[in-house]
Amino acid sequence: TLLAQLLSEVGQSGGESVRMMPVHQDLAGKRVVITAGPTREALDPVRYLSNHSSGKMGYALAAACVERGASVSLVSGPVTLPIPPGVNRIDVTSATEMLAAVESQLPCDLFIGCAAVADYRAAAVSEHKLKKTDADSGLTLELVRNPDIVATIAARPDRPFTVGFAAETQSLETHAGSKLERKRLDLIVANDVSREGVGFGSDDNAVTLLWKTHDQIRHLELPLQSKAALAGAIVDHIADRLT
Amino acid sequence: TLLAQLLSEVGQSGGESVRMMPVHQDLAGKRVVITAGPTREALDPVRYLSNHSSGKMGYALAAACVERGASVSLVSGPVTLPIPPGVNRIDVTSATEMLAAVESQLPCDLFIGCAAVADYRAAAVSEHKLKKTDADSGLTLELVRNPDIVATIAARPDRPFTVGFAAETQSLETHAGSKLERKRLDLIVANDVSREGVGFGSDDNAVTLLWKTHDQIRHLELPLQSKAALAGAIVDHIADRLT
Image (cartoon, rainbow over all chains, first blue to last red; front, side, top):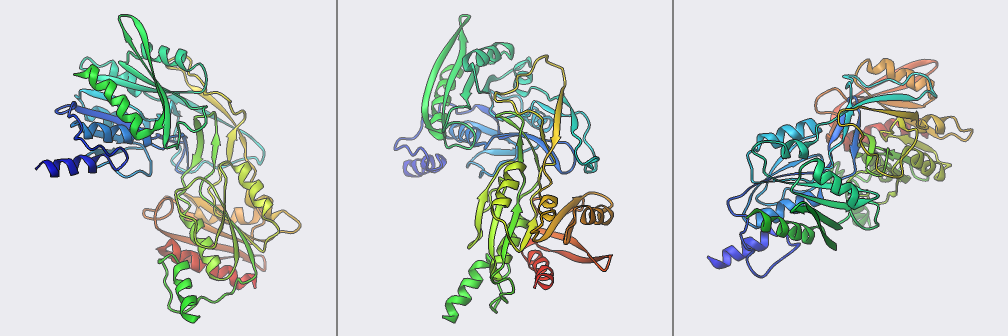
């Protein structure tokens, strides 16, 4: 019934962006894969390297895509968020595991790499806890590069529409524009994480969307708003270009 | 009233170790400082080094000490646990901040260093996000030693009864016994984190207590049980020696 459909729509919005009208199902039939949260790179059984990330932005994007009719796989690093209704969550820890989980969900129509993937991991992971030696001595940690998940997906012959995120603390548009081209992304969501009240852990965010049309980089500023509302605005932009 | 007192006791136990009798107030008038959770050591505004720790054991110890009449300051790294009723929680991120927060709470009668403090921090913290250079190049991270919080407290002229934790993956009692002596602790709680179902993130744990009497190291094994019950058993042992 219409009432049941309406209630279901309201329920899927997680109470954060309750709409009185059923949301337009402009992603119906689309397969979407989203990464969210940090990755953790073990140094030994006790220590790890990680990035700040609450996972809230990626989870909000997953909820927004489900709401618009997509089938969504959410590949998530360690966070403390509940699974959004209707989302297929796959839990991972390291960047290597995250890439394998994403690849297991291909092919798809849309990939959004929202996770804060650790760029480096230890060259060697100790099976036992590393023991300290001299009381005052330092430690030199040899790190190797992790796979670049979003660039790996964008380079596939069967590439989906591929969206990356760029968390920057300076020269936001220059760095993000360069990432867009180098990684061959269809869209990049740039996030100035040095601003107060936005980004990591916060419930709000403000971002700039960058994409290319006719060899020109286009910009769209999305002002400070809840991550749920922002996810809706980002998916609006994606859906217009995807369909 | 007796009923109100009884209900308050039950409330303070967090529902995990409900007792029908009011708990013996054997820590009444004692000041207790406890550290819990991991520390995070920033490499730049995005990346950090950390340790696995849910904070559950330290929070259970704080609740157990309050239940027995102590005044408890809980210096906590980033965790997602609620503040136990009656506990004064002080939130910190790095090991340096944790030591400063502990020192701000001195003097005290009992210090329990339960946090998984990162042994090392970056020699230099970048103000801006470190940019990757060549696609396949590695990274060498220069780390320096963090202060040893439990050893620093145990070395003070006004030292409290000082309890440390040892998370080990091999030669548990040898490593823990050596820490007990080297750091001049009154008690060490040794935790074999390589065992299934114990330690990090788990609600249960099994530990060995080690302490020295008459130049001999004594052992007490506390079998697998809930962290709340284990906290009670550890505080039983401490209270016997403290009073």
